[in-house]
Image (cartoon, rainbow, N blue to C red):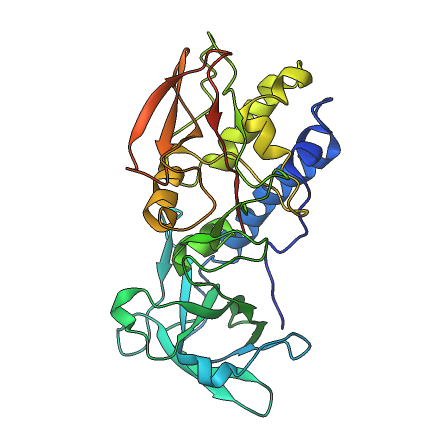
Length: 340
């Protein structure tokens, strides 16, 4: 059974959400519904099964796609392991327990016959849950968050089958060039990935706006408390959606704002958005010394302070956060991000 959740194609955000700001379109509905469906599928797939007696032996295989250009996977990978989760009574995810009482972290070994990492685990009871497998770089210290080379997820329902096969995706190290040409600056844990459906955050490449330097623009929405934004990590996309919806009645003005620039990013067919304050701070931590940012320049976040101000972060410089005026003559740098 091959499982690949939350892997639908993505389109340009301003086009997908708002049809270039000309109203709420089916593209926007599809995007939001797909996000909701992704979360529902993950949580539904993690429901515990109480019937049946244990223990249950499960075979796991994370298989490489031989049609892709994957060079020397065995030599690149030093360790491959899988974790098994199910939903808790509180609606969160919890790791399952093996017959010996330990949490389920299973070591997988490479099988050359079918180009997959395989392993077995013995669960203490029947279960319906999610498996996340990660192959990390050779020679990496397991205590130091080693670079992910390959990863994949699958669903296990021991009442239907005790064999789980799912595809391997290419992993990325922090500060490595991502699939859209920008730098990867954050990787979620297996648990976070299963909960949200995305694993990495990538900053837009240096030429995302068609020029060699990031553009400067207004934040917009001056003298208006939108009440749709948050500074929290992982909220940038939701902030951007909320601001685009509020601004759809005046698409020409919205196109001049920070969220308008980010959502209309031209680098590929991915959905880009204006990062939250905490996401910008993470960009500073990981990418400050790399090329692609204005020297000692502040960048808009999607987080507003009050009706007159929004938060900025000095990415390539000090990393300082600053509350800056939304006034129409106040131009600040902007760079979008995306999750995948």
